[in-house]
Amino acid sequence: MNNLIRSTTVALSIVLAGMVSAIPASAAEKKVAIANLGPHVALNAVVSGFKKGLEEGGFAEGDKVAFEYKDANFDPAVVAQMITALEATDPDLILTVTTPITQASKRVVRNKDIPIVFAPVTDPVDAGLVTSWDKGSDRFVGASNLQSMQTVLEFGKKLLGDVETVGLLYNPGDANDVVNVRYAEEAAEAMGIELNAVSVDTPNDIPVRIAALKGADFIYLIPSSMLQPAMPAVAAAANRAEIPVINASPAGVADGLVLASMSVSWFDVGRQAGLRAAQILDGAKPSDLSVFRPKSEDHSALISAKRMDAMGMNLPDALSDCNCVK
Image (cartoon, rainbow, N blue to C red; front, side, top):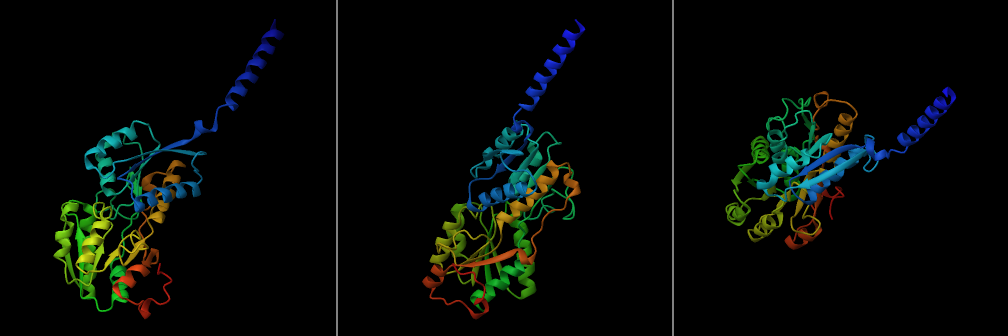
């Protein structure tokens, strides 16, 4: 009888071991929820870069991590509902894409143990997400797309010559936009350039607001959650007013909608967020990590050959070796 019991126990152990080994690897995957403001070339690049950063950190999609993606299609009315739905999937971490989504997550996510990685948030200190660039908070860390306004203005002068006045549109209800205006004002004052910042409450205001900027040497289109999706409307109105546009994103440059861009790679901003997310999934706390802030060398220029042609421009000598005309 004892032999029979021992044999049965051994057999059962073998069966159970086989069952354990048969559990699919996906059961051990981490789940990452992605809350995006809406489908847009720049924001899609952030998400792609984020996945790349996670992969570099050891969390490849379909192997060590699975994603749950939702976006609000740029509709503020559905943001809270979207975030609540993502939290209900019980993720190990949430990526929030843009400042409005990140700030909404601070209010909406009830489980304070879920770490939240943001990208891009222009100034996370000003947005109240972290207390310094050197470390995250208990819940938040991520990557900024804060551009050097001095770099942008210097590029504008190299491209267009004697720049005296720069126009800038911004949404006064968006914390990111307000921060960008402040940095632009500081840089312009230091360089002796007049900055004409005009508020835009809705995309419908764009043609009238740009008409008010007539005479500016160029318009700098900041990385605004409202204005970037409306870039074709900005470009059309600026072209009617005969004002060149330098965009904060490469979008619209190659096809000649805008003259140029001076931008931080949104893919790399997402990648930096992904690298931090991988560390968190490996056991680090957001407060153990620093927030990524772009340096001057993280900026790159792109100039539209098509737009230069339409404007009767030649590439200035100061940019002859930039290898940035497309």
